[in-house]
View (tube, rainbow, N blue to C red):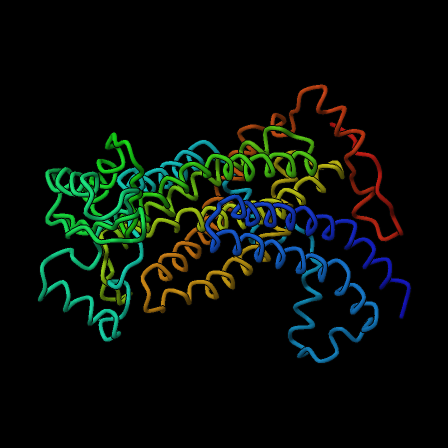
Length: 464
């Protein structure tokens, strides 16, 4: 193997390898934030997703370089001649590429393009204001499923709402004045259709089933749960059942969501600052991720909550989105969006460290990453978008929502908003307070002569 191979591999690890490391940290942190929730299915998805991201980074940084060293110039031996010629053409100057020309076009008129792009995302996100949530029940199953058929028959042929009652566990024995008085008191509450006779649940415990007047999970049934729990009683009363479990789930998600947001946003700001030395670029990345996510949620509301595309997507709208979908989608989409942003900003920073002006560095960075990010986004969107073929509506929501978020980020955000905003901000893109700038000068790194072909090393970051 000639000397070019090790040199090229070393330079790749010093540039792209560092990018892979930063991007894996952002994805790992975003997905691992799900472990904050006490719900085991969210917790396990967070741990599992973080492990997958770390393993993928390890393979890319350790195993792949070793394989490339072993293969040497034989790495393209089985590729068709046409693809080998295309690979040779990839060494052309950055100024010859379509993404370079697109970025130049955008940066010649940054104000109108930034305004139009942001306005479009905001308009797409407006339906998100009216989002409603629900839980999974038999209605999400295919019409031919046995559980769905039984649930339909119970709803149609029997008194309403008897299959999902509120279950009261009372700290008083059956037949006592306390349990009988509670049953009568609950029966007088608004929103109650029927109360079953008090049943014994043990020596000092009794059970009462309460049928709500409205559908389970409806606003009226949730209000009934809260009314029963708000009763002032000298003995303990626990409320369980489908609606009560949903109320508790919503409360738990709401209680832990601020912590998840803080972890993901803080990790994004820290990682991007360590990579760029700027406080503006990380804040801008968080803002653009928020625009992208709001647009995605708005589209999901239009499709699944409002019942559009029920025919093409083969589902029946529940009139709301499944409660955990925004949480899952936030972790996945935010991590992936930051991942793509890391790839773009790393190339822009390398060009700037090499002496390129701000707009030229942006154009070069977009050219060097445009095809890679677009191809990765399309492949990921196709893979996870296949979930839209599932017969379960909440799986459709997750698959289609993640695919939409990734495609929005790879197109409107990376191709239009990033170059236009960076052109508008100019030198302010790289601003940081003096203490943080000095900190980054000590811990930050840049490529020394990144365009050269000699064996180079990492040099301390220079600020311009």
